[in-house]
Length: 462
Image 1: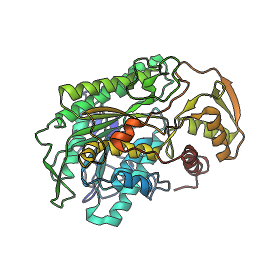
Image 2: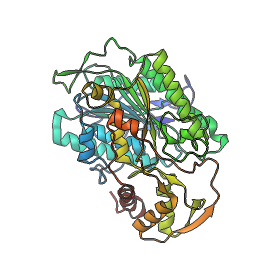
Image 3: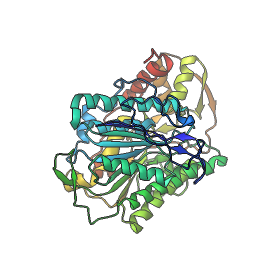
Image 4: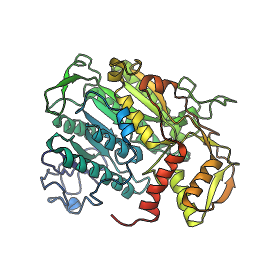
């Protein structure tokens, strides 16, 4: 069973434990029906939940301090500053690598955030809890500095495959703005990994395709397709100053949908290229989510932006990504596995630049109305990369240099799931988002190494 958590900032905080059985309508361990644990107001820093044996335990641990490794500089934040402050945004996958940084950026620019995550164990959930601790520290610091005017923050442990969990997130969001419906959502939850075997396909379909469909359906159910209220005001932090806002979902896709590109292709990947020959189950599910999202824009009047991420790097990178895997092996003197002769290339993108693109996409309709960017369609697919492919040999050399270690390389054939290179054409991102990645690969990787050494390789404690 999973304990559903709600921790809020702004006014009285609370914690809600909601027992989640494995099947719908099944009884929970404490004998009640699903979602029956009673909310308990237990102060700003909850430690345990009475009334249910499953939940009578410590539920919040970790450092309560400002994050040491901030990836969103003032330059990043100024690039995504906008007029409608005080809106509420639901973020799925909020405990992940990109999701946690996205939550912090939203809070720092003044948005209320409802963060949700299910802590699926495809890597150590402790890493996700640490990410959330950093988000909480950011929210605490902002609240300390801004007082009652600070943006509100809540975390809810929830499953995107469950409609009632998503409805709960929307209900929480509405309380942040005196009942005004939530009209913004960023969907980053999902199962990643291009090297998964075919036997994992059902899990990838459930966590990517089914979950995204439920998110789209939740957006439809909660009025994202209603154009009649497109000009209704959203109260900006209780000031009475309203601004027009329309429903919009920004969701994560992947550069893996391009596969290897057309035969003989040497240039960057652009959004109009065919994306119907995926090389992995993961890529197939991400492309499927794009297609389903397009259908929802036609049949349910939704506005959706699909963002194709290109190899994101930076602090909090997942342990199954090459910076973490190679970094720990190089540090310990273990061999690393190199695919092919080292000529493979990836368009490594700093997580701060990726988050800047995510937030710019969230606001693209308002930014277009303000003349900042060009108008796009209700449905758009947009690359978020760095426009600078880095070879595997260069990547390994840079990483080992930053760690001051000599790598031991074990070369193997390139797996069929791996394209030879990825390279983002950013023409559309510049036109519709004013997206301009500003962090060189070397700085991005150095930022990761600084964080990795301090928190994983040579931790000094909280």
